[in-house]
Image (cartoon, rainbow, N blue to C red; front, top):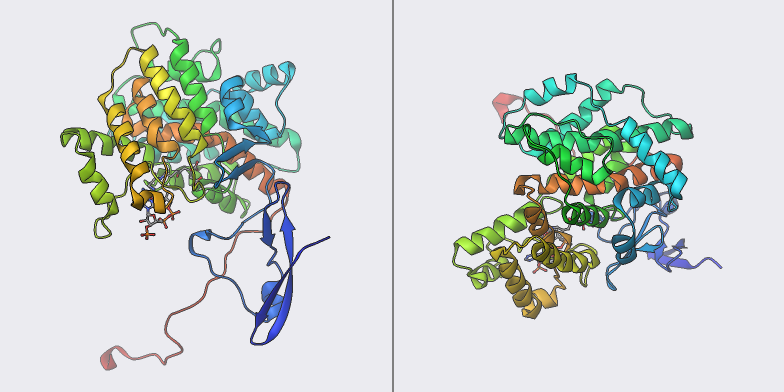
Length: 428
Ligand code: SDX
């Protein structure tokens, strides 16, 4: 029995159907609103109350701190699966069996070469270029070397585009780091796993051998899983709306990278570490930064805190916080900013300003501490977020195209000048 919402405008009543999701979420279906009301639409800056699509990929419950990919809990996936397995799950909807997993990995490896001419584009960047700007540019440049746009109605073509970007993206990410570090580019090793190979491309010294460290591989694998997808966040919504114009997968992902770069979104992991280091330089004065975060006249925000959807602990932050401790212990690292992070979290969780606004640590609060321990420099943190989020962007782009969703084109309410005659310049 379809639930109905009733609306009354200027004494006239309208009825709108209610959509119910498989987890009991309800939404008023306003597809026919403008037509049936003669032009009335809705307004919702930041889409805080507005759903953009029906999706079967990720479910999250912000009040209960639940996150699931295709029905599997993030806690179980982080514990029992590896990143490429989770990428397969997000994109194709089911966990792969051994044969599917082996084929997926082989097909990705077969696509992990990047045209040598891409290096000429990379050479054009100054060493100081931020890796996210380099990564979005090189991802876009891949179109020139893989011109065939994806015929989404062909399952094989779609699969080839997916393994192509999954194969090349880690290379571009590692090259962005090597360029900034003044290191010769590395091509990876087909005998290594996906995450291990990425670490080799990042850290192999030109003159030395790359030796895998299972602690580092496992920690990064877990971090990438935790970043895999997060329903309609800013960058994923960007990928979907760019893809809705039938721009290709690479172009849509490049747009998503730029959206993720912002410090209010994926750029927060870099901003958290910069904030913690500033507090450390300031003698560990967390109270001063708490006061700044609460001061409405101060634009400073407590980076890594708060979330559009989670009004409880971000389940990813819980897992990462435990992992941060484990990784630092296993690697024998004593990082003073971990202590500062813990103090800040404790203070915030007891402070009425944060408690009243339900501001809890999010995925970005502790992830930077692990990246640092793994030897990944701060300016690469958001690129690591992009590497983890890539399967989610692919899955969401694929779902939007296969469902043949219309081009995204929101309405607006005009609040500018009413009609006025043109004035000659001498009369102004
Ligand atoms: C990610 O959407 C996703 O799923 C994103 C993500 C993903 O996986 O894709 O989870 C990844 O982007 C995590 C968020 C990373 N960003 C940060 O850590 C930056 C710091 N956080 C904030 O800027 C903020 O919390 C947002 C942007 C995350 C959420 O902002 P909202 O939902 O638009 O909330 P808001 O800005 O309207 O804030 C509500 C109130 C305001 O105070 P009042 O006007 O009510 O008095 O809370 C305050 C805000 O000033 N507030 C903060 C704060 N976050 C919100 N005050 C101080 N420090 C903060 N961090």
